[in-house]
Length: 105
Image (cartoon, rainbow, N blue to C red):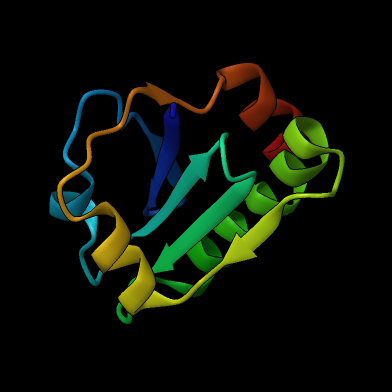
C-alpha cells in the first residue's frame, strides 16, 4: 500500500512525505490521504480549519478521484475511521505537484 497525501492550511498545500499521519490530524488543517490499494480518498477537515481550506480539500479530492481512479474511487470523511485506520501510519509520498496545479490552478 502506498499512502499519498496533501496538507492544506491557510490556503496552501504543504508536503507530508515521511510524516506521521496521526500527528497531522489536527483541528486547524485539512488533510487528504490517498490509499491506492483501496481506491479511497480520505478527507480530514479539522473543526477549526477555514472554509477556503475545506473547499480546496474537497475540490482536490474530486479532481484526484478523476485522475487516479477514473471517478470510481471512494471518498471517506468519517473522522473516527480516519483516526483508527491511520493512527500508526506514515505518508509514503506527496500528491504529485502537477496534479495539484492542474486541479487547483
